[in-house]
Length: 221
Image (tube, rainbow, N blue to C red):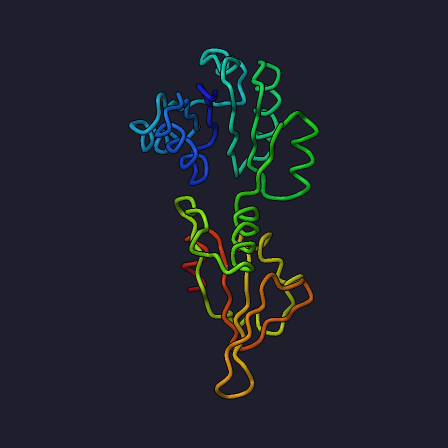
């Protein structure tokens, strides 16, 4: 049974995981260098503390080695994520879960001991696509705080470009789930292109269903 978890990095993903685990009865140690982020979450976890998690002595002082799981959600400093992964494994944490944002970084972290790597935006997109394909969107799991599914018009700068060119996940942190394309024949239903392939080009008038961070969607909505 999961009893004790350390979460490193209290951005949207890390804070969401930490508070949910605490609500489910797990003892949660929440860590970030940013004191403001620590103060925001201190009432919603067991212990919230600001320190440099790349310093081994800090991990030892907070008995990180006794944790059942360490979740490393340090999104902006890849070197720190690698170092914290190594230190957690050296201290004996049996299961280390790391948030990554590219397949290459996933391979690097797995090579240094990460037991599980997650790409939240991509994996949420895949799950949603499955539900869309089976017409069961209403059963889709609730998105974490700070993420939304929205239908937005195609920005002018994207018209005529292929999805591989745009590389929306890498460039914009967006998963494109479906293209809704108006029919050329008046009165006919719009075409719905679920999970379009990389060579698909976006047309003027297209609307797209995308999942991603609210701050990115706000720019395009």
